Amino acid sequence: MDLRTDETHADLREAVAALCADYPGSYWQSLEPDGYPTEFVETLTKNGWLSVLIPEEYGGGGATLTEASIVLEEISASGGNPSACHAQMYVMGTLLRHGSEAQKQKYLPKIAAGELRLQAFGVTEPDAGSETTKIRTRAERVAEGWKINGQKIWTSRALHSDLMILLARTTPFDEAAKPSAGMSVFIFDMRNVPGLTIKPIKTMMNHNTTEVFFEDVIIPEDSLIGEEGAGFKYILDGMNAERILISAECIGDGRFFLDRAVAYANSRELFGNPIGKNQGVQFPLAAAYMQLRAADLVRFDAAARYDRREDCGAQANQSKYLAAEASWAAGNAAIDTFGGYGFATEYDIERKFRETRLYKVAPINNNLVLAHVANHVLGLPKSY
Image (cartoon, rainbow, N blue to C red; front, side, top):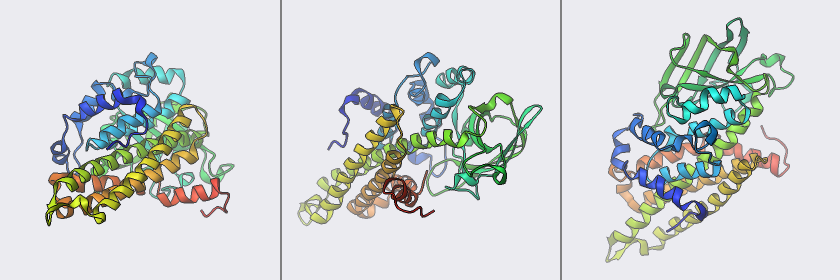
């Protein structure tokens, strides 16, 4: 069974799969419920996979987002959890596309060499959620640089990152010309910063997510990325990359579910026949396979548009929606195929089932994707 619609990256797929073979299900099981896969991340870093998007002149791999998405897909398809890796890829675009040359020279070579980790993306807030324009975290100019006050939530991997990309208001919400104005993006070293507090959030899947509190946190003047007040536009760029990469992870999850379920359906016998002979087992697996194929095509279309620097907001959202729905369908079909064994931790189905469920609501709820398509693609009245 081959779900891969892009055959031009066979060597890339094989190399990532070979690395992941050293980290079987037992490795990921040992990290439950919230352990960080330090060894796996260090191995990826050492082999250059977490710096694939960094241009070669800064010591990176010079890869496209399409190729980065394949790396994450293969990690998922192997049974691994790429959530500890993906932020360094999608956050990278904000720095690459909008950072100054001085910022790139300062950070990119060290990230590529594994000396710095860029995993924390501070955007969501308790009272803002998907309504990003309502954020209240404030950045004010002071003699020492910028003073930050506020709170972020669902900031995954903040405890395992050296650098943070932060979205904050440089103009208060009630003074901004429009809701999306007055926000700016910053990059700064978050290690040993007075006034910055990180608290883990326990969740149903191993995602290493946190809430971050800023109390008179001072960061340098040169932390500002691009123009002051243009941060919302910059963040949207990163969010498009995030949606595309997450869709690739979901497609990898779907491949994992189907590979395991098809093998089990062919080997498990009841009443003298393999259970895969029964249409009640076959049809959900076949339907999930077709959903994954369709989502895969939209993923590659969205990634290609991003790589060409074309507008890809609609395609990025659609790819995330389709892939999340497809991986969830594949997970449900796998659970039904395995029956009781689908809930046994040793088979990894239940673990991946929890992991892939997240992406129906994050990084954007699928209902908001439907609302976006209805309004921006179909031209229907805005519902939010």
